[in-house]
Length: 209
Ligand code: 5GP
Image (cartoon, rainbow, N blue to C red; front, side, top):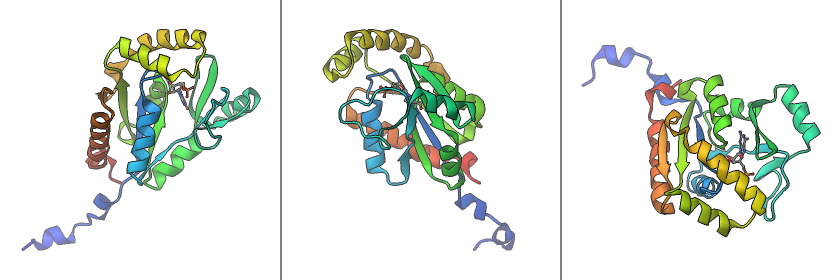
């Protein structure tokens, strides 16, 4: 039997929680897009935060699903109005995360997964409190593997590839700023690890309202 004192306490706040931002970062070509697609397919309670970008649409990409593809003028307008929680210039194009979309998800207890580079992760860390977000770094098993994956993806010009590989080296040096490191070797193992992180973060007492 529970004591009367226990029953009288209002514990309702323990049963609701704010939304969590799962920040997934890692070098270009490591497999973030695949991991995110699988995660949102398997977990209906998590949604992909669609970024804005000024880069060209790649073949197979859909506006409003993969990105909001916008002009540099529009990006600048949004940026100057403070509409981005974070934004960065990556490989010569601009990328930004909508502040409003994140706020709404947070308030309604909806979890979001974000694909951002290390600069974006750093800005979110500076601007939002720790319990709001979990920072996951997705790393390749080796540099050689990253180069091979990049070659087989074949969506960028040789100059683009070169640029992305040199940025990858610098990004790998920031791993220690993240909460979790997942090495993407076998996709199934990676998904098990990512899903375990999501479950653990949802159980954190700090994310309760
Ligand atoms: P891609 O052009 O290959 O889709 O993405 C290039 C890089 O931009 C990736 O490292 C990706 O994580 C990053 N990126 C995508 N969206 C955003 C965003 O909204 N903000 C920031 N800071 N980086 C982003």
